[in-house]
Length: 174
Image (cartoon, rainbow, N blue to C red):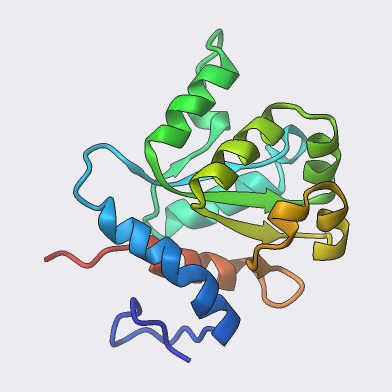
């Protein structure tokens, strides 16, 4: 089915679960649309994924015109990663959590990704993107995140997921 935020020319189709999951996120995007200097998304990922899956997701999103807070480009050498992440979280409309085997390992270790995840869970503004792992494995380390519906690369390619995310966060000019 088409989402209410889809443009008339959009060919993207969503499952009923995706519509139910993404509608509150879209409503938040619309509510925060007039706030200045916000990025469309904050990309939470494991350090180990920064050159692979996270970079791929970042690059695909930016190619669709989505502004992304991504630690690899937004944290300057010598800056506090934790403090810069905190600022990035505050200045983003939506959080994406790239759940990979490396992310699951990092969450167990309670590193920066775990702190970002905690902030995103508290704000209820996140979309999990499950990649090369399963929700069952995620639920073992984060029942709260694992209970959230999201998007999974086992169900559709990353490029299709990115198209849905871009449509979700893109507002048509008034």
